[in-house]
Image (cartoon, rainbow, N blue to C red):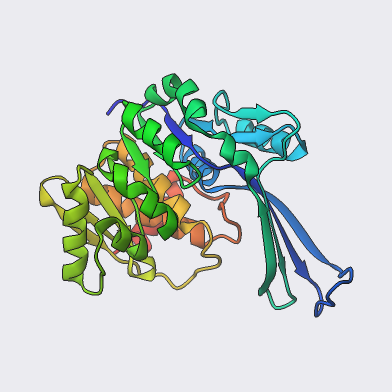
Length: 309
């Protein structure tokens, strides 16, 4: 596959996390630490890809507020293309806020992602030239069923998806066979395959069912147990990890998907793609933030050498 660019269609948002410095007093102002960062599954995947040296194009929607400006500027600073970004005047950008107590446990969270409903069928149609010019296209769970149906029936580039949740996995079922690559976790795989998974034999059968729909490759994320892969011709690979230095589990899935896409565009073997995907996930969980600024090919290769089995 020639290396051009990777297009990602889905969510981009601003995350605000607050943690109290002492036991929280409800209905009062509490001294604490506040942290503002860029987020969103799709933006996070492309962020990791940009750090791995890929050309990326973000297809998403933001408001005309300060957060929208922050998202555009932040993506462009990473070298990410934003020509597919819709800016809605007078709208609020997708924002997530969480409040944690002094022990780090979340008390409450709130999200305002109304802007993402702007990514409707017409939005996708207007951006098909950009999407079809990509070497690979990846999407996340923020597309509506009509938008997803249009994308999957008109996209000429290989389509990849992380179901993100069991709820969105159900939306994927009617169009599942139009995807080249899917990366579910065990629960999402049960939904896609329409069967419970409790043994390795169940997992292999579930993969067989998903591939029978027309999907070319399936990577099942098993958390601490690694990744299970089944691809064309029935080839099966499995990788585990010997890693006890996890700092933050958030963002592991996004980095793993980025690893799959990057290794695929590089033309690596199935076995090497699996190694790279798991290595990228390990780089992610070894950092304190959702996106590890140390993400690079060198960092991934070092993780593979030390911890992938």
